[in-house]
Length: 222
Image 1: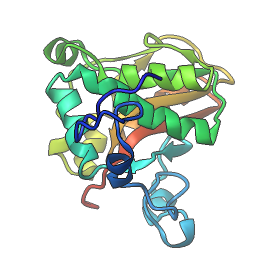
Image 2: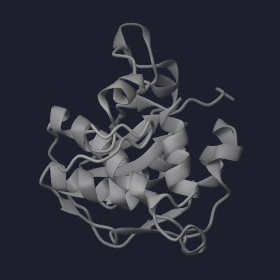
Image 3: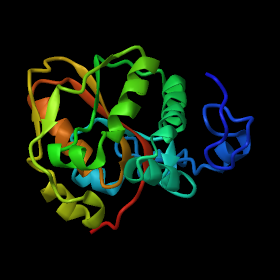
Image 4: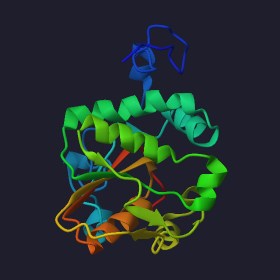
């Protein structure tokens, strides 16, 4: 990978767009967390919410918390169309993937509705998913599923509203019998979007569905 200036401080000695000092500032996920949804828990136990209402995905993997300064980079990339940040953000996810060495039959991004795609100009999750698939030597697909409608932005909703908002949002185009699938997105908060898509994958026969995100945010428990 060719070095480039750090996207945060401008240092010319950056690796994959981030210098060592700025990379060390990124808010890492705690080691002890729920093995299902990555919620921080004592001793890495399954959290209460996953015990009562387990998500449809089998596990959620995230290297970082959605906090300063990573949240600013993701926001600028996603909404500010600063596509030059893709390399640095993809590098953070692929570095994490190399350490985990997962195996999947397919890697897919969370799809955007046509209206949202036209408004934004690109699907930020697709770039992350492509880099992730290449790193683990898996097949990438951006046409296995689709978003049926342009749902309300999840960031404006509480947990229960998020679940209702995406309950029927996705469709899957073909059977996935016996397949292991990784769904990639930029940020997970309640996990409702990832769970809704995972549920549809499993209805089509997927054996295992894991969610991989760059950052994990946390919403109120309501």
